Image (cartoon, rainbow, N blue to C red; front, side, top):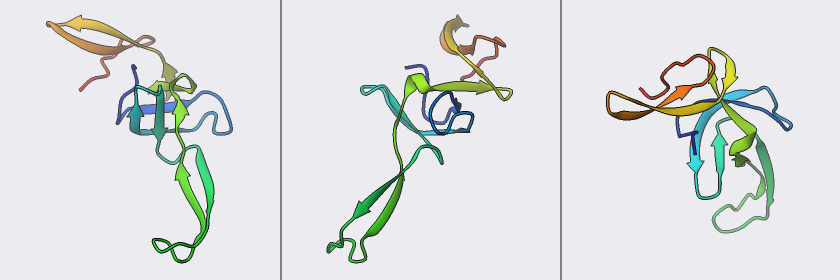
Length: 101
């Protein structure tokens, strides 16, 4: 997976199309990512011992990695890998800018 935790991404499709955020969690086995402040879902919970009030719980739901793209200079770009100085680094396809710090 070419998107990692901490990357700045833009949403390509769905109800949050065009919004940007930072990846807070990457799930490579499932091919999904969680982006902060995007794709907010609501779950209705009954009162329980752990949550005596119950009510509505809002949380960030996972997005498929194909629905997000890496952002460089405010525009979406794909990511490719190159070997520079003997190290494998991520590079933005549009600008050629190195993504890894």
